[in-house]
Amino acid sequence: MGSKDVTQLLVDWRKGKPEAFDQLTPLVYNELRRLAQRYRNKERPDHTLQATDLVHEAYLRLIQVDGIDWQSRAHFYAISARLMRQILVDYARTRGYLKRGGNAQRVSLDAAETASLKPDSDLVALDDALRLLAETDQRKADVIELRFFGGLTVEETAEVLKISTDTVKRDWRLAKSWLLRELDAKQAQS
Image 1 (cartoon, rainbow, N blue to C red):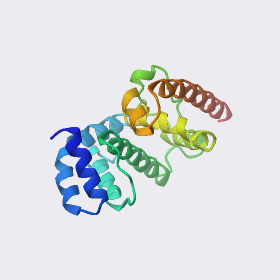
Image 2: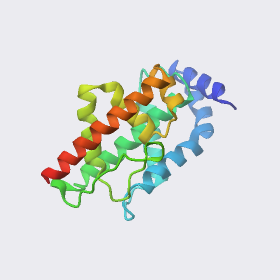
Image 3: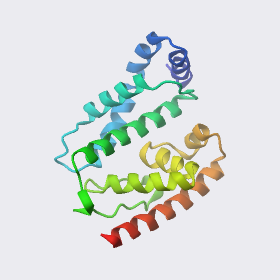
Image 4: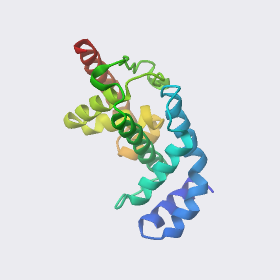
């Protein structure tokens, strides 16, 4: 099945056809597992939430999401990546991970095309900075989230956000610079 078939199943699911989700699951599971493993590799080695758990929790949250106007396969993976990031952030906050800056490490967004968090990076600080950016410029926060966390290409990000690839590239550069300054300032305070 191609991406058009996945998109059609997403549309059918949105229209209230539960069998569409059942057909969609095996088609997207491996890619979601890859995304979850990528997230998992960015966490500390003793993290107890495994990639399979992350995928299953994301599925549970996806089933509960109402009213998403699925645009494409890329849009589905972007939403899934956002959910996985939020699951990890919620998990970290619940466990009191890096409370009050303890053991916080600088999060680098350098090497834009291949950016990845180090296993001991402060996901909570990055999430806080992204939320602050979203208050100022939601689109730039979305570009960071889709590219950095979702692993979407410039073209896929442009498709999901319905903007040009040049705008994605510009937003990526500006948002990355803003986040670096914000994270540096936060680290200087701790």
